[in-house]
Amino acid sequence: MMKPLIYGYMRVTDDMEDHEVSRLEQSLSTFAAVEGYCLAAIFYEYENGSQTAFNELLHELRRVEAHHVVVPSLEQLADSQIVQTLMVDRAELETDAAIHETADAC
Image (cartoon, rainbow, N blue to C red; front, side, top):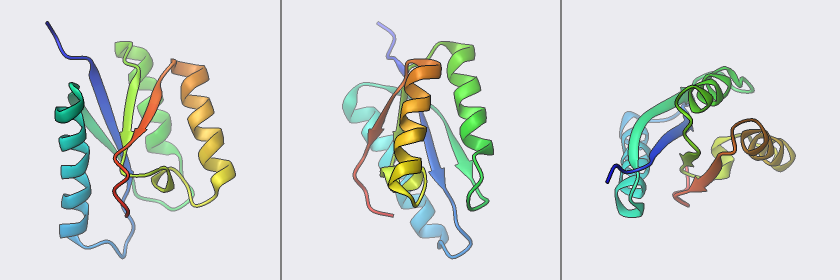
């Protein structure tokens, strides 16, 4: 039986060390493996306030009909809790996707 696809999403800020980025990537990979998913790709947002990678992620979810996203924490979506909620709702409405947290602080 094929495992369902899951896509990762994370923001990479200028002040993040390489080892921190690697640790967060590993947390996404571990979550996928433990929960029975196949981690297809990780989308990276590099510009503060941008949603370019998030939009690309939603496009990919629609294209392959995948319904799962993993983030280290909802804070990876946006600093504002209101924007976090809007992004989670948008993913659910536009792609029927659930966003899972590894609860790994950034």
